[in-house]
Image 1: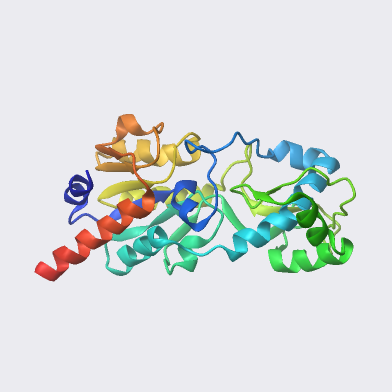
Image 2: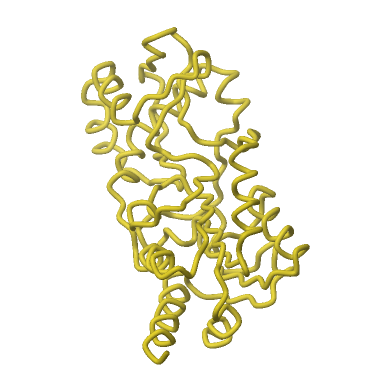
Length: 277
């Protein structure tokens, strides 16, 4: 199957869509993999509509974002970056917020759902770094991270959310400029991806000769729409994912294997082709 993938994608410039499955080898869990526990991410309406939900979120994120910030790219991310350097890709559309493609050295990356590293004020639209907010939250909650992590242990969800229960005593901070609500610059469930970002992603897929999906179940339309678009444009589609996806019916080839294995094999095949040329 790996040889079939390499042959199908040979001499074609790729648009690559990635999901949480590409980051599991970096220690970041996915949402819908075969061994993933049930998860109920906070929705946009919950976050903006209830101060208790916001407090719960920020308490958990105050622990979880450090784990994501410390995560490092795996061989799958590095293979994508190498494919870009070799001219084999037009870019990456990632549904992940972990910045691991950028950390691996990829340059043309569309962070479809934003990233964990920035925070936006919903009132004045000011952006600050997550590091800056961490310093403010630590001042407002001295010792919280160490106390909770030591008492409960920490399980991390794919959106940098630490799974902890006791958050009632956590103090949330607001925008220093206008006093507005601060929210991670991440697209929540129930929230729309900015239109300009979606348009750039469509343009990227349109400019490619083929589409490769790596590590996404394509359960939500956010990623599935690019597969449908590529199919409508009659571009070859390869999907690499542990388990079935909503896009399988559009794919020319599906591989039920790990992303690191598949992407590394694709990069090796590319290197072998160039060496023999």
